[in-house]
Length: 522
Image 1 (spheres, rainbow, N blue to C red):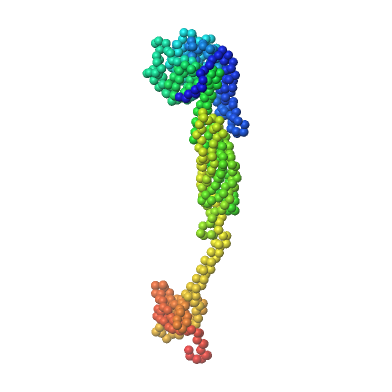
Image 2: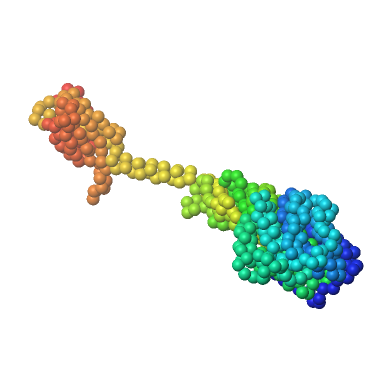
């Protein structure tokens, strides 16, 4: 329970109503809501915030308990309360619900219905207090809770109690004292109502001995005891109840935005940074429903690989649920790996965003409404795809050419060893026959054998071998007497030597023998 205490006793006079009227015009819920901040502050006024939230369309319950015991006639207190209530009611909207009760020995409902017709509501008040009436504050609070417990109650409710005395119930009251089981029951009922309604109490003691006002705080936990320094302050203090309800309306609406802030998304596919410069799009989106947001000190960067990101404004304002797309400039390159051949590299960089998220509504609504706005932005897509063409354009063709050349050299070396050029002649004859041998000239790297005298088939090729006398070429002979692979035999014939393969003698002549003279035996 909050207390606002005076620095001197209340003083009442017969001319207070006129003074209160002027005070209330400056401090009524309407006037307070339209107050503007200091010039150059850049923040909207509460009135502008309330209009943006359409608070006049959000209902609130007001239960007003006016003391009409005999003491209220002293010094024109009751008349002052009536005139002050008129200005207070003028600040409510047609969506608000008003329950006006007077209480002395017992409470009496004077008006229960919609706000908007102040004259009609005030006219229901009695013209003067009940001279012989007592002050049963417990019964008055019981009537208030009964009204707030109806099925169509609003989500914001205020109980406003105006009294100049202490709790002095009549005989037979259910609340004979200011504490006890009956008050415990009231407190439990208020707790149940506060479980589904934003319930607040406002107690306005109209005199130094008005100790009964503070009993509201014994029932309604969230109660402010407003102690005006004089009756002239009553209008401004009563206006706090109206302004407090409006602030609580705003708080309930803005509670939907609790924990919501700004999300960031990198738009598009992989960004090509081959040239070291590129452009991309970054989207900032407000996730709130009612609250405008501002991002100040906005900065972005990419790491792993590291690239500079520019083009973002220092400050961005986002309306509720709105988004803004920014074209950002990227500077930096993707480093090539150990193999610098020409290729397309794909990397995922990590997006980092810096900046403070806040709202221009925070200061005007403080301290009545505390906004839960995450100070940092939520990055929806931290992995930013990048691509770039890296490496040398001539390296891969050069490597392929070198490999081909090495292969060619290796093949030439192998051919020189395993397929040397053949020279001379090869004589083929039956190993045990007297026939004239077949002469086969050796030319090229491989020679097919198809001797006519001994038949069969085969082939001969060379093999280069190093010796102490220098390199020489051995002859590798394959031969089959009947042409089948099953009877094929192999043998190696040294230069100028002989070898028998498959029953056929093979003799190598390094140089062709001269042709015999005419008529001479061979």
